[in-house]
Image (cartoon, rainbow, N blue to C red; front, top):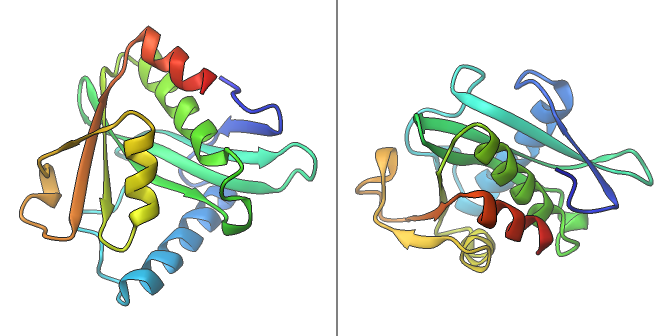
Length: 167
């Protein structure tokens, strides 16, 4: 589902080199923010557990500007992983468009709940999820007992997927 006329959002394989480059950029930024490379509790996402991975391209330049994926947690729940937007495009709706596309894809796969996590060094991520209709929840999975983790969840249905796409 295209939600931003300036973007072309494509589903790609986890091993796609553009997606891998964006994930490396995200991890480098988080390493710098947290001041260490061991800031992710639990196993990192992989081809084996990500149901979908999207890359957003600027239609004008053709350049990749962001990415995001869904890791399956169970038959009806997924976690947003590696939602990332290049710094120079932040505030332009790229992250919201990727989120809308992820929600639409989740709905099409029968996923009814999406969870997300943002750490203490990610106030922008926490604000993004809260402003996107996610509710704070107790830490789940590998984030249980992790003091700096903030977890969120949102129910997905046809109405919510359409509402996000129009936001």
